[in-house]
Figure 1 (cartoon, rainbow, N blue to C red):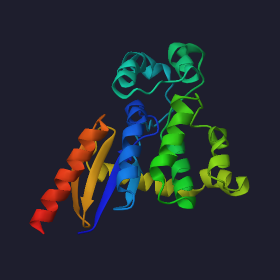
Figure 2 (figure 1 turned 90 degrees about the vertical axis):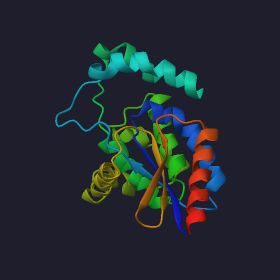
Figure 3 (figure 1 turned 90 degrees about the horizontal axis):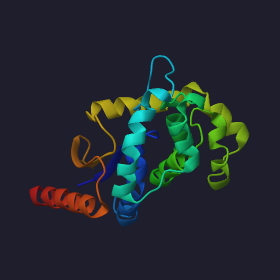
Length: 218
């Protein structure tokens, strides 16, 4: 039976940032056995731009928990915006990073997990504004794409539609929080194996349990 791991994340999801090391270990374990698909969730999609100050207090309270659970650290350049929101010029929106992710994925298929992790590092560690196209320029060294192709793609209807399609898939899977991981069996069956931060050992145990159950049925 054909299987695939599907990971729903969002570039602005701090818990996903903490989860990145766990999902990368799973990727290393299963990359030769089954494909991985990452889907951007569209967690922050305001009708009108909303300033970072509207969520800064929540982030201030929640990010230490993510650090404690995962061992990751949020960078000082990111946290400056959280502790000085009145001076920040950030208006978070999930669309631009989702589009950027789609562009990188188009050129470098099969390593979605690594691309997503680097985009999140750009925000949560390095403090880059993901709504600014320049936030991705440094990634063109690691994932070479000609600048004359990459930056127009960020503003193209083609890649915006790909990002919006990812958002629609997330809604179709009824994902209400990130991260969420599914084991897809065949074309239509999706088994949730992680919701929220999940340790590598627990996630692997869940994947193996679903695999075993499916194999016993077939």
